[in-house]
Image 1: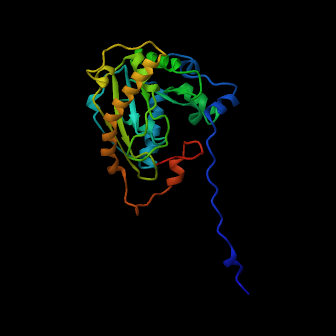
Image 2: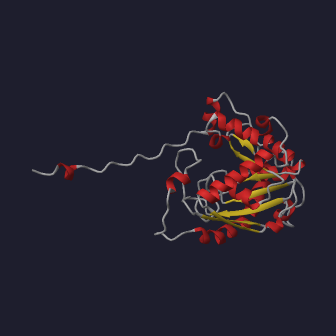
Image 3: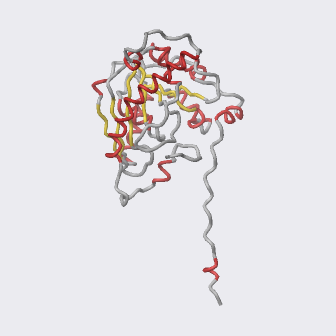
Length: 294
């Protein structure tokens, strides 16, 4: 009699669920406020006691319990405050912490970040509003103007406005993906110093994972666009403004891309290296869905 176990066919693994669209999530909560409208106050640049305490707690967990190791350099290029920091490659939930690791505790950084990815519960949303540091965006929302206002407020108060222009954690490890143009529109309208930040190693996380960042010299819209730019900023909302934003994105990508590729090899462990809790840590603060690493 044949062994019934030999006839068993292996179960096919069910693919992860597709991501729910941010607009659908916003509609489900009766609409979504963005930026300063959501925050309900001016974004402070001074580090509060709560913020300092939470930053120390995060460091204890990330670098103590998880033993993450982040090598950073280039801090001599940081302005004293009132600037935009633009980071890539954006590959996971650890990226904001990599940014914070690269800059001082004060002036505070305020991230233009995803509401759908961050607000996974009401209590979490309430806590983040009190703590500060996030100015949410809901894609398919009300346009770039509200985020320009957020950036202007942060810069005017001497803070740091942080953006990740890829706009998604999907993308190839060790290389930057296509930049969206929202960050560049903000830069064109705010005209603050721009600090590029190269990041690598966050595409997968496990106990003892190595990551890296490098602060590049501060630049400006005029420096990135080069001498061929006539110095004229087009009217807001025009096709000409969008075309200039695309040029600005291409110029910044050209500066960040090679540095990301240079940093990445030092963050990669050999194939036989133990990757304890890899799945759990990689997805710890990411909404379930598919990630394209091609």
